[in-house]
Amino acid sequence: MDEWVHLSSCRRQALVRAFGEELTDQQNVCCDRCGLSLDGYERAVRRPEEAPVRHWREELWDMLFGGGGRMKRQSEQIRQMTERELLFHLYVTQGLLLLAAGGCSLFLFDWAEWRRLWRFDLTDVLLYGAGGAALVLAVDFLAMRYLPDDWHDDGGVNEKYSAAARFRISFLCALIAVTEEWLFRGVVQTHWGLGAASVIFAVLHVRYLEKWFLFLMVVLISLFLGALYEQTGSLWVTVVAHF
Image (cartoon, rainbow, N blue to C red; front, side, top):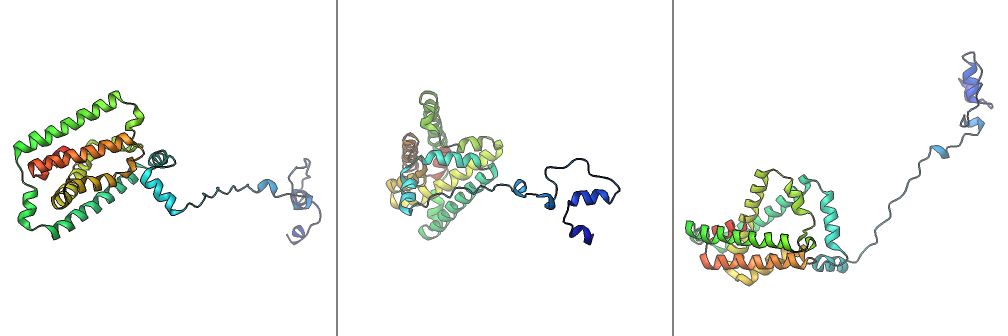
């Protein structure tokens, strides 16, 4: 072995001779004594191009006003996310809103006032809640049927949720309806008015700013739900309409 290590001639030939044979075919890539090059074994590593560093003002402008194809980038990001990742982000968001609604209620309402927010009247729920939901669905159906697809493209969010189980979708709709109506109508609108509730609701849907039709629909639906709450004084009505 020591001799083989210190050989000045072909190592492959010496190894074959040790077994009583002769090397008949010379290899193009033989050994280090025959001029072996490691270039063929080294894989070229391509470094990813570093994204240019953007100023925080530019990022904020894109977030608020959708510059530079923000909806397109968001659509690509959503399509790359798994359903589990998307659900995780949704649960975190709704959990934060639920904590905000519960925390504000502790300071802004006593028990009797809080119970009045959830006053249940079957007639109001069916007439205003279910009727309002039917009206919104009808408008949405007409918009999807007669308006260009690009107008109501939300960046792939609904496509991801459509793959979820029916029970899960129902649970998500109920969670979102209860959480957002409790916060925006029950807390914000009760204490600061319909205008404040609608503005905050629209700000949380700022990702739709680049899609003017979707953003307009969000604002109008928020005003519509606020009007239902002003008329009935019951969160159950707006929860059913939102659902």
